[in-house]
Amino acid sequence: MYAGSNPNDGLEFYQTQYADPSSTAAGPAAHGSADDFYASSYGTAMPIVERSWLAAFGTGGFPNEPPLMEELGINFQHIKSKTLAVLNPLKPLDTKIYDDSDMAGPLLFILVLGTFLLLSGKSQFGYIYGVALMGTVGIWAILNLMSQEGIEVMRTASILGYCLLPVVFLGSIGLAIDLKTGQLGTFAAILPIAWSTYSSATMFVTVLSMSEQRLLVAYPVCLFYTSFALLTVF
Image 1 (cartoon, rainbow, N blue to C red):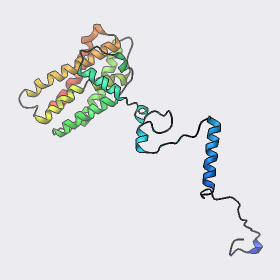
Image 2 (cartoon, rainbow, N blue to C red; image 1 turned 180 degrees about the horizontal axis):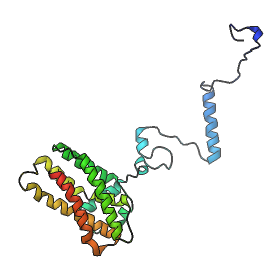
Image 3 (cartoon, rainbow, N blue to C red; image 1 turned 90 degrees about the vertical axis):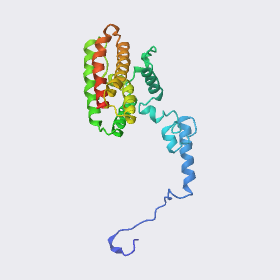
Image 4 (cartoon, rainbow, N blue to C red; image 1 turned 180 degrees about the vertical axis):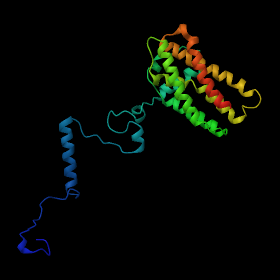
């Protein structure tokens, strides 16, 4: 009976017979019963799950669990293959690497370009994102009007973003020298624009089977990268 209560209230409190689940005596028995239940249900012993930061980013968690980067859609092998394809546009293109709409590389290149411009005294992040968005939507619409197969907007953004790499190199040059000095910036921007245009047009033509329309594809793409080059130089 509770201390201080009135015996005429009719309230009686009884002692429970249940053991404390947090006690050390019940701990091993409960753990063993869980192992036995898992073994009888799945035919194998209960796996030991590693809890660490390395296990979160690797394969040391649950059995057959894919890595975190794979779940996020980040494939470093594809990023490497696409970057090398941009750096060497004369090499035969493997169209399988563009079956997915990988945006990790393009977002990284845009962030690096914006950082280079910021270190050069040009805060152009808003213009970079605006030109990238409007240009991608415009080129995506043009390609779907020109081709019979069509292309997704995310694949269009992925190809345009990876081929922005030569313009990123132009932005790194701006850290060492002033590109607005005389005609230096104009001549320095010609090669990155041509490089990016050729790589991007080649990829679009190969993926969409539009070999006879290469020049028509290259024209809007060239305007797209020229806008980024103007942001980089001026």
